[in-house]
Length: 314
Ligand SMILES: Cc1ncc(COP(=O)(O)O)c(C=O)c1O
Image: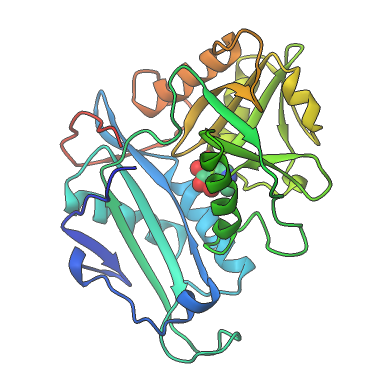
């Protein structure tokens, strides 16, 4: 993984501050108890300039995560959207990855969040491809399960959830895989450490339902919309592990991972190991819209006034 590339500014509680000044105290609540929520968003170079993909939906999900954890952000969706645009335009870096994060800050130390301030920061930086292997990723089923539904809520994109993700991701790496797929506590397919999962089986596109401890991915929602629009039959359901091994196609979806074809699972090849036709069609449509090569017919792009460079590779 490449080192983080700094930019000029970070947005903090309404103001742009220099990158180096965006610091927290070691006694902040978030460091001890994991009390953060965040988003990961991409800004693409398009034919018409730079544009942020599904910014409104990401900001709505940040507000949803805040609501679940009783964090009052005191910003509307429109204000959050404007803050992200301001940050990206001030930093003049595109394409980029955008990371808004809200957390419980410095004040009191104890599990109860008490009167600790809520801090909101937005940073962005150049960033490229995430899951390795253009030709398809070799992945495993993790020995770690996703969080049980009545423990950490999967629909909240909270920092604490990523301790579980780290276990999944590290185990996969140590065993020579590029990513791990976690099952839910009932043994059904959940998701990757940082991606949702799709399966093509007998002409149908399947993905785990929100009851299987998955994040309600924005890319997942985009793929569902595109597939329905293309006339592909789509089902959100509980998926047994063994269906993955006999699937016609399997792919990850995510802001970072985009559409990543999966070539093998637990060393069992998915058909002939090549990205299948539905995966390729959906990836082309998704990236086509994100990069302005195909019409933005669902209104997913927010243009930003930044001169766009060629994409970097992380
Ligand atoms: C655990 C997890 N699942 C799924 C996703 C995909 O979500 P999205 O498409 O909104 O990026 C992510 C991405 O951050 C994730 O961390």
